[in-house]
Amino acid sequence: MRILLFTGKGGVGKTTASAATAAAAARGRKVLVLSTDPAHSLGDALGVRLGPTPTEVDTGLYAMQVDAQRAFEQSWREIQTYLTGVLERAGVEALQAEELTVLPGAEEVLALLEVTRQATSGPWDLVVVDCAPTGETLRLLALPEALTWYVDRVFPAQRRALRAVRPLLSRVSGPAVPRDDVFDAVERLHRELVQVRAVLTSPATSVRLVLTPEAVVVAEARRTLTSLALYGYRVDGLLANRVFPSSTDPFLAGWAAAQAAQLDAVRADAGGLPVLVSPYRAVEPVGLAALTAFGQQLYGDTDPAADCVDPLELLEVRRSSEGFELSLALPLARREDLDLTRTGDELAVTVGGHRRVLALPSALRRCTVAGASLSDGRLVVRFEPDPALWMRP
Ligand SMILES: Nc1ncnc2c1ncn2[C@@H]1O[C@H](COP(=O)(O)OP(=O)(O)OP(=O)(O)O)[C@@H](O)[C@H]1O
Ligand SMILES: [Mg+2]
Image 1: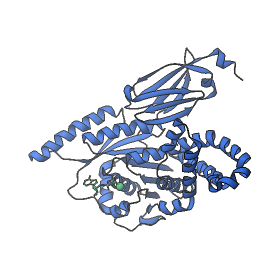
Image 2: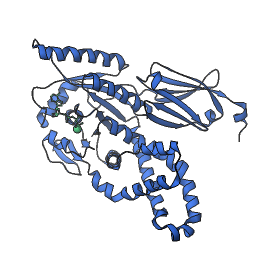
Image 3: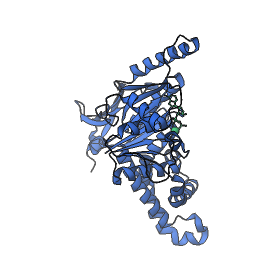
Image 4: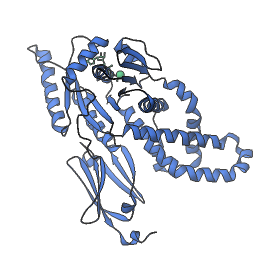
């Protein structure tokens, strides 16, 4: 089973690329393409009406539109209201509040639950996901870890504290007191989200980043590439779409030259990642035939589902002469955008406004941070054993 996630800036061709990849891959396979986008563009691209369950569009090719709104009403509203209340009442510390503002729209989260459900219990050889535009997807992908942090740290204490005082409080403050079933709902959802993250960061899953070779789009793609790595998601290829052919017409020739320069920069920065190129079509590539042709042109003789790169070690801890080194892949990250904070048993890595909190393994907890460096797309943090910490039980 393989999962391919397509993301990228708004309007660059994510839906088209997802549908084209699924269509080209569905030869003798069972392939599901699904969209987490509440707009019905996947159905529009394929030229069929899609519902909340898989519809067979062609032999072996199925498509569906996740109905996140309904799921939202069923399971999230209660929790969301509660969390908001907790934040307001509990005088949440800055760091916690920051982690919580990472909470994305619940609809996207629930859409990912459906992706996981289909991937783990459906009959599929390949699941292709047409994701929301870059920013949304990133926030959504960061959620399980942010929520884990919250559920592990804040929740148990709060729950214990509230159990003790509830009998007193319920008389005075009524609905302000969180009920046990709200805690249960959050814990259930948290378990599901941990599973979502496990599935989406497993070696079977990779992300393909769609871009058009224009300066603004490429700049955002760089940031996305770094943030995806930060959160542990593996990008296995870039897809440059809507590339103008060379031409004698001055208008087109101007665009073609500007795009060629951007493409060169993308290739130079991609650090070995394959960059697939798709030309600007004379007409919109809509309908099954056009999308299949799009996919065949894109992948040529190679299998669209094949992993384009070796799974690189995203996060590793190894011994060094001084103690240990924690190494995290951060392609295209720049030094000035990077920040590291050690708080007790955790290391918070921030890159360009995105933060990941890493729980340190026990060996590293007994060490102090001796230094850090960023080179060749990897952050290396050096740890030295601290005798005082080493004596800790
Ligand atoms: N190579 C191409 N040549 C010509 N038109 C294209 C090409 N790729 C995509 N399009 C068209 O560009 C439009 C936007 O593509 P698409 O809907 O796939 O983008 P998207 O990234 O999914 O957008 P959104 O962010 O709104 O979901 C569509 O009308 C699509 O048919
Ligand atoms: Mg789309």
